Image 1 (cartoon, chains in turn orange, cyan):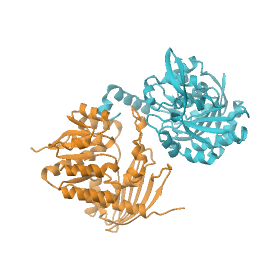
Image 2 (cartoon, chains in turn blue, red):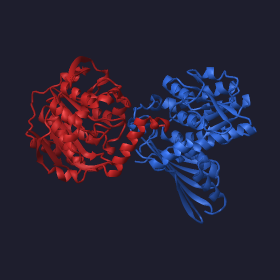
Image 3 (spheres, chains in turn green, orange):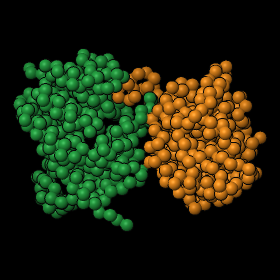
Image 4 (cartoon, rainbow over the protein chains, first blue to last red):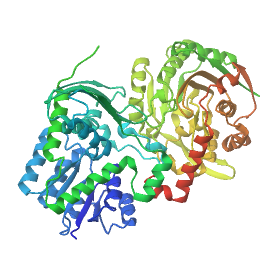
Length: 328
Length: 298
């Protein structure tokens, strides 16, 4: 049976999640990881990864490497994707695709030129609850969806790292808009926009109202109104101001309405799930999307969400940043 | 025995009145010869004041107004905090509303991790500590500690006046002291004695945030912490660092309460219940057994 040899670039918060999952995938061998942190590399080595690199460029020279997961800060996506594509490695790229549409277009062009596969990391599409919602939309159970209300609100990069056993600082790039491309809208809004585009098609118009509770140059709140090509109107609320976590989609159709909320399991169930499967129900979609990516590579199929999806999400986000509504 | 005052305020408009009343109850009188004041709020990570985890900048604003009224309009006021393992001071000042406050009230924001310091040696329980002590603290005429009342990590249980001085240690990677936290807290309080503690208990964290409307004041940080522990449903005589602080002569656990009976606040404080205590012990067990690391906990 064919196995895909995978490398992971970036062992930050999301990179660690991918590493844990990738090591448990069928048809996959994680053969290398790259990160600047020697501590993270040591941890990876202890978990059985043979090749560890402080330079991802060196890692890309491994001839047996088929594909890479790029889980780096957003400003590094373009360069890293270019290097990986030119080394003929397939790419799983964390969202958002890039800081702006110009960079995203460059990534797309490089990927096409090098004839490699690119999949965007949008786990909500692999969450069973949100997949069920898509079925309900298409089987007519809800009628025509007139209004969608989507909330994705958490503490974003400022989550409770201080409560961990060894307190971890928020990586400093998160405080620099030049490096992130924006705030809560590009970070969490990209998830919602991608999911709603999957449900309703392309966005024809979008407007936003942004909030700055934390006095930083990036928004920590965004309320967007978006119109989709199927005539659904969506209200998208995203924020980094909540100590807790809310990810909720409400659909109101002409026949019925429904609400789906993605919640962590209780701590005891989480521990049992982690011990049994290496992932929790909360992160199951992250594992499912990686398995799907690997399966697509084995079958030589183009995985989705594609790079084009990543670009369209950024186009909608840029439009939302441009079309701001001020409220007094 | 030290005096500890407890005052109830109904809204943020009563903060200044509440602080003054709390100070009157402990018979505190302002000296008009004061030139330099240092205020140490409790900034913790990037937690908003609404969480009850960090000192409300509105509380500090009213304290500044009061100092300027009682001491002199020209008194120099510095708000001090330091970098920590998981908090960069400059971002915390900005995100938590202290930059706006400093601009409005013309006070200085000082990151102690960037200040000039004097080396100081101190012994607690035969253990010798060497700290760098910021000169701005050593040279201030009046040092005011404005902490929160919070539950905290294993072995300490409570954060209030004494623990807030931990944040005056300019060394950023404070995590290294977590194994000897009680001794470190006491050592830092031995070398940096604050003149006044005014507790911002308008919003408290407990097991969840709640508007408690408490203003508490005292000059003995051990007595203040003892009162805070009682409000939080803890027995101060069982808290290791309080016992140690008393032994080292920082203050006394016994105190004379003034103002609103502490049971009024105790009955309203969002206290730890059995389930929360059990979860805390389970989490600690996961970390200590190393299983936490395997589950992705740090």
